[in-house]
Amino acid sequence: MEVSNRTIMALLIATVVVSLGGTYISLSAVNNKLTSIGLVPITGFAVIPNATATVTVNTISSIKFSQASVAFSTGSVNTASGFNNCTLSTTSASNSGCTDFSEVSTPFTIENDGNTNLSVELRSNATATTFIGSGALFLWNVSVNESGSCVNASGTDRTAVQPNTSVGCGGTTNACGSIFESVSTSNKNICPSLLYNDASDSLNIDINISIPYDAPTGTKIAGIIVTGTAE
Image 1 (cartoon, rainbow, N blue to C red):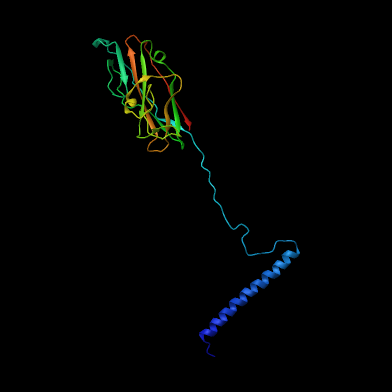
Image 2 (image 1 turned 60 degrees about the vertical axis):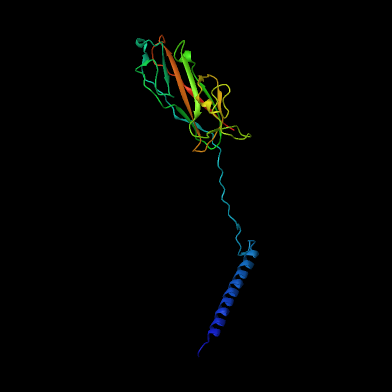
C-alpha cells in the first residue's frame, strides 16, 4: 500500500506524542514511588539554574629601587691641581676636582610596582658628616623619570607635579626638578601621589657629594630609604 507524505507526518507526530506520553507516564510512576518513600520527586528543572564566577583583586602597595646602586669607585681630591674639594654628581656625569673616581650618569630610580597610588617619603641613614666627614656635602635631587608619574594627592585636581626636594617645590614648576638639597635623616614626602601605571610610575634620585681634601680615608657607604604609603 502506498503511503502518502501526509500519512508519514501523521505517523511521526503520533510517534512523538506516544514517546512523550510514555515518558510522562514513566516519570509519574517514578515520582509516585519517590513520594511514597519520602524522597523529592523528579521535576525536570535544575536545582541550581544559575552559576556565578567570583574573583577578588587585592590591593598591593609596593615600591622598589629598580636602580639601587650608585658607585663612584675609588679616588681622591686633585690637590695637585689646586682643588680643595672633589665633587661627584650623577646629573652631569662629570666629576670636578677629582682624581680616579668613576663618572656615574645613572641615578637611583624608584618604581611603584603595586596596584595603588602611593604617597612617597625619602630619607637617608647618614648625614654628610657621618657619611664623608666634616666639611662634606651630601645632597639629593628627586625628579620624574617617566612623564606624569607624580601628581597631586587624592581628592585634589590630580595635576602632575614635580617631586618635592626643596622648600617651595612640589608644585608645577619644572625648576623644582633641578634643585639639590641636603639629604634628610627623617622621612620627607617627595611625591604626594606616585602613580602605579607602568608607563608613569617612577622617579629618579640624583645625588651630589662634595669631598674635602682632608676627609678621612676609607670606604664610605650611605643608604637611601624610600617608603610608599597607599593613599
